[in-house]
Amino acid sequence: MTTRIPPKEITGLYGAMVKKFSAKMFGQVPESLGVMWHHVPVLKASMGYGQKLQKWDECDEGLKSFAHMAVASLVGCSWCLDFNYFMAGNHGLDVDRAREIPRWRESDVFTPLEREVLEYAEAMSQTPPTVTDEMVASLSEQLGAAGLVELTSVIGYANLTTRSNVALGIESEGFASACGLKPMAERAAVRSEA
Image (cartoon, rainbow, N blue to C red; front, side, top):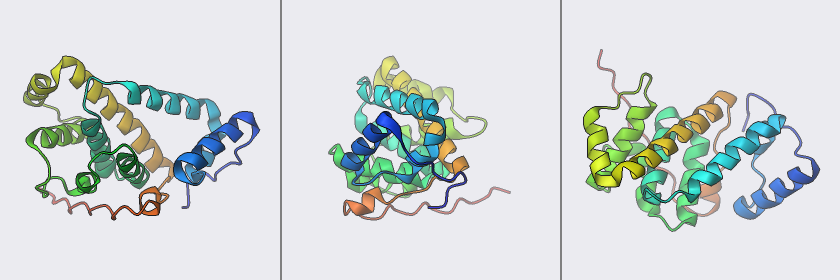
């Protein structure tokens, strides 16, 4: 991986804890941590928020994971796609469906609700967002207001992390392949309506 900011050596007591946790979780210390180590308070805030949102339980974990992966696929964050695919396997989610996220529109493995969540994640990630009243009404009816607020916050966080990684040149570090997961499906080419 060639990042736009060279990784910094991870040092100190907190650094030792981060490296130990990372090595245990991933089997290695991700190079991306060295990039973020240039500003430890930013790293801590991002990791802290990520850990907090994993504890929320108003929305199905699989739907939230799929939504994050849809954002990563749309934005082009190979690190987030790889990491979330790896985590889906670790959390017992359906990895065969997770690997299809980049081509969800062409794939027949997703339920109608999952398709709505994936469409919502992409709509939230457009500039400007293309979310419609109909999308919100349908998802609110199916997930409840609290579930939809949670899903929306997860998608917002996914946009923060994916766009930051792409801007800094942080790319996939091969977590999923190291676990023997099949390669991710390729995203279909997007046609221009010009």
